[in-house]
Image (cartoon, rainbow, N blue to C red; front, top):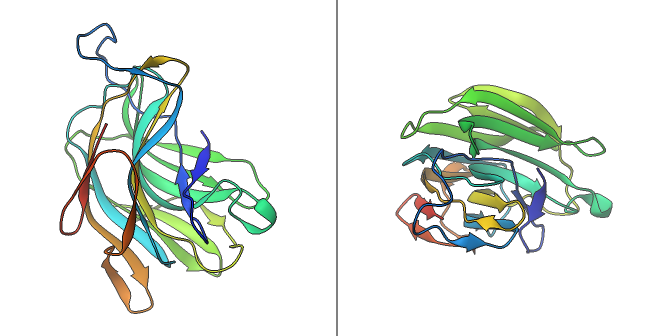
Length: 220
């Protein structure tokens, strides 16, 4: 896994994971060839926040030919910390070839190596409430269904605040067929000084999304 940054001042992350499996064969009709690399379909807030949350679900088991397909909320990014340090925290659901859908949390604390925690299988069409919140000065913690998951991350900024991100992400390893997914994000919100509020002022990231009142569907 690695993390890709969303371009913007005080950028926040678009991180990657190794996700997503469907057991179907790439030889099926209608499968699109893909170039290697990352693709995204989601939103990043235009303003900094003290937390980001969404209820995430998979409408069907993702079809993952290589790499992964994930849906997550988080903050941080590659080279987005002070002096170009890479630091981030993200949590959500992800699918991997021949493995199925799993809950996960991933963090890069400043000055440390990436830590990825597989939290066990996730169910298709089940809704999971996921939050990433600043719980102390520059200390960020992830929660799934109200339960703390993984380790807290130390994420100082290069100035300003982290932007909240909610996105689907796919990674194709080498030249292969495109991974297919349909993720749903509901109740997408950011924590500001006055409390949690719908993430309204947001910038679209990457591919196909269908925006709704307090959420969106990400399709790949």
